Image (cartoon, rainbow, N blue to C red; front, side, top):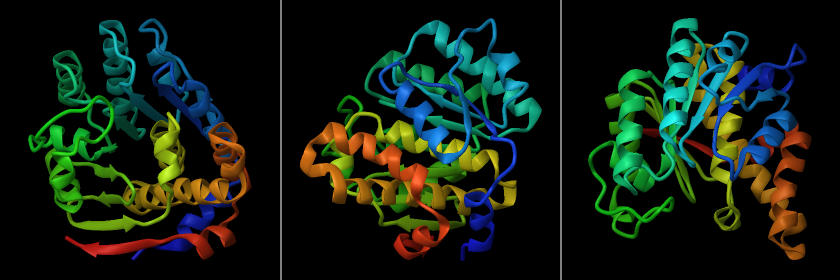
Length: 274
């Protein structure tokens, strides 16, 4: 079971904001930076190969997101990832659209061959593809064919294959380390109608990972997934009537406002035996 006293320490952390170095995509970079700020972190969105190792040297975690790829950015991700591994800070990998194109798939494999991720977070198609279980790609969304895969099974396979915490995101998120797993039932289908909520979730996981001990990484990742889902629920209840733009901003608002007591009342994290 999750030790919620440890999660409370993260919610009530008052020290120097941890630097979360993000090499992410230009579609959602602003939202990712803002949600990390709202959580209490200090985001740096540096991606040039000439500076990524310097930024990693002062960072507490690294978030890699392949949403908008190029050869040069892939090399920057690898340089930063290797530097993070040497320094011993956690790496979050978001394999956006893995398998949707030959280049994207090849880049994801190259990154995973040269960088050890502590957390991999993707939708069911992305994670299925990384596990060799995908039946079809559909851009950055889960394909209908892959919906037939078991989220629990894919999460377990990915965790064991890459020796990391794996997160299979969807209406319900599944978080696994290959031995233990959690199903997170927080969230709303409205989140799939706004671009970037997955990227923001990876950013929140990067913030939690920056403050987490290695042995607590599974629990902290599950809590981060639940927090993002709760923010979506709260924003939908208040803002969805105004439109999707207000809903999107509301998610960031609630990340900045939700306190530990509210989190505990609303979290729907269920342990699942693998």
